Structures are given as structure tokens and as C-alpha cells.
Amino acid sequence: MRALITGITGFAGSHLAEYLLEHQPEVEVFGTRRWRSPMDNVAHLEGQVTFLEMDMADYNSVHNVLAKVRPDFIFHLAAQSFVPTSWSAPVSTFETNISGQINIFEAVRRLEIDPVIQIACSSEEYGLVHPDETPITEDNPLRPLSPYAVSKVSQDYLGYQYFQSYGIKAIRTRGFNHTGPRRGDVFVTSNFAKQLARIKAGLAEPVIRVGNLDAVRDFTDVRDTVRAYWLAVNKAKPGEVYNICSGTGITIRELLDRLIAMAEVEVTIEPDPERMRPSDVEILLGDCSKFHRDTGWEPKIPFDQTLRDIVDYWFDRVQPERG
Image 1 (cartoon, rainbow, N blue to C red):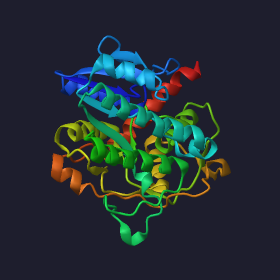
Image 2 (tube, rainbow, N blue to C red; image 1 turned 180 degrees about the horizontal axis):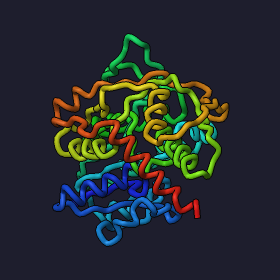
Image 3 (cartoon, rainbow, N blue to C red; image 1 turned 120 degrees about the vertical axis):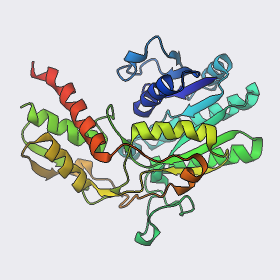
Image 4 (cartoon, rainbow, N blue to C red; image 1 turned 90 degrees about the vertical axis):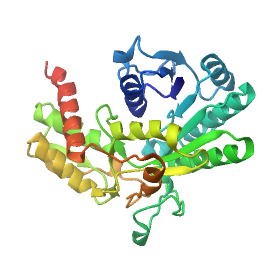
């Protein structure tokens, strides 16, 4: 069997590749990258994974890679995935997230191959969620509040449309917040942990700069999330949509408090206007019972372990800066 991971050099892609290599040795792993993609997250996988250069925006590039690999599974993770960037670059967000997925679907059709395709959609699609609508099921209305979220709604519905129209075996996973080691430092858990690590190492003043601390989020460890992706392509129903989440909410304020306690530093917290969004999603708390029913998946890694691993990761990363 062959698995193709788009965006393998990213956060979730690198963890998925590790999961497949360790737990699914019968699967040959291929991953796409752009020529300028940093390889830090996957350098340790050289020789175990076949890396292929591919431009998601170029149909011929996508077609050529799929023709070469002819995968049994496609994990489509490549995306512009940072919500704030979508405000400053909405057009490129749409081009990357929507056009790239259409190119995959069209290449699959024209090559007449029949892979199961997992599409990494997002809980951001739910957007404006009313208090009486939590925990959020897959039937909740979609009220996206950012260009990123709208692009993910489009990816989501394209998966449904191509399944209905052409029988493409698309499985749509609406992932709630997932985090862990190697998460980019623009995302909240890593951003706080990196700030704390630099403060502890004496490389920054003892001030943590924050955005909206009142938002409630549902976090899952990335290592549980990628295990869910594998179960999705093997046990979930093509054409269906599934929440992947822990079912437990935490405010960003409590998240920061836990990280500060783990870092064992004293800090001052300061609001940063640059971290405030034009419109923010106040609560994302999910219900994954549908996915559990169809696949048996449930998260296993305690959130405090996830946070500890993130803190340790960033402490190790900033040590060389001390000289």
C-alpha cells in the first residue's frame, strides 16, 4: 500500500509520517514538498520517506506526482493554515486551499485511480457558535468568521460534491485545535511556550504578550489526531464529515496559566493589539461521537502531557541561543 501526504514537511504531516512508519510498516510513505519548504520537521525521516516536489497550484505538477505514486491513500494536509494570515492574504489563502484540492481531485479523476482521500478541514468552519450549540456536532450550522474558515468550508463541500458527482472517496475531517511538539511558533500553545522558554533562558524580558484570553478551545494532541487520520481512511465512510476533538474545552487564559506553572517563571501578561483578530471565534467545543462510532477512535494523550512536551521542545530549541 502507498500513502501520499501533501504538506509532509508541516506540523501534522511530519507527525503523520512518523505514525505510519512506526505503526503501519506495510505502508510505503510518500510526501510532497515545495522547493522552498523547510525540512526541519522531517530531516530525521530521510531514507524512510520518498519526498517529491509538487506545487499544489500547478495542475500538471499535481498530476505528475499522482501518476508516479498512484497512492492507495491521500492525506491532504497542505494548506495555508494560519487564521490571521488569511486576513492579510485572503486571495492566496483561497488559491492554496481551494485550487490545490481541486487539482488533486481532477488528477485522480483523469488518472482513473481510486484512492481514499482524507481532507483536513477545520472546526473554524463553525465560526459563530451560540452557547446552546455546544458541544458542536457535525450538523451544527457553519458560520465562518475568517477568510481561512471560508476556504475550509469550500474544501469541505468540494469533498462532498466530488463524492456525490464522481464517486471520489473523500472523507472530510473537521479537526479542532491540535497541538504538540513542532507546532509552529505563530500558534497559541507554541507561541506562549517559546516566549516562556526565552524568558527562562534570560533571552527576553519577563513579559508574555497575548491576544484574546477568553476564547474557549478544544485541544487534541497531534499524535492522537494523526492516528485519527489513519482510522479515517480505513474505517470512516467516504462522503461523510467527522469532527476530531477531545470534547473538553479550556480557555486560553487557563492554558497560559498551566504553561507558566510548568515553566516555573514569574511573568507579567500584556495584551498585544497585533494579536487581536477583526472577528474572533469565542468558543469551539466539539463532539466526536460520530467519529468514535464509525472508527472506535478516542484521544489517549492527557493534555498536561501535551503541554509538558511542548514546553520541553521549546526549552531545548532556545538553549543554543544562549551561546
